[in-house]
Image (spheres, rainbow, N blue to C red):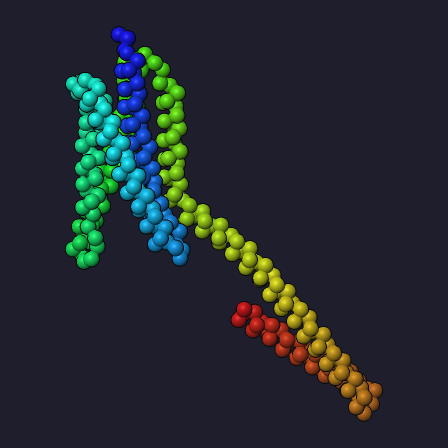
Length: 269
């Protein structure tokens, strides 16, 4: 049966209103509030979370208004016999979005331990109703596209592909938000490690330079001692080996002292 052009326009408008409200604005609102739990710790964190919260609330209110417009259009223009899954799920969805709106305005403020427990149960109910409504809405958009094809004979392949791509991008964004802080932390740690390696190389270079300076100073002292022993040596030539042993013993003493000093400094770095 051929449908009038006006009827086709009404169905198309109904579909766009329901897609815009439950298929785009509602998931976008969920992404907005999701950001508040994934915001990196910073000095402007409270302000960023406040912006995320009010963005979520605004998107959900606009979604509620647009979906209500689509429901009014369906009541006025279509036969609502509720003999198919698309209409029955649509009725449940319109009830659910208003229930969710009522739950949202009853959000308890935390000012005591008892209120904290109530807030926990409120959050669980709010999350279950919101997530369930969003999933049912996505499923109903697909059934609506199929119903539009069956009623008009027009292809909905392009709209199905575009809506699926949108869902893929939103799902990826939803899942990626949990990993953003982790990736940022890895990046910061990598930069810090590189900075520490550079600083560590400079420190080791300075220590090596100091050690070389100490070795040169000790060698100079040993030569001075040799000269002093030779100048003051009044023993006969047969005792020269004994004097050299003393010099070598003294040199070993200075070298051992320097090694112990270096070891002590390394333990305290």
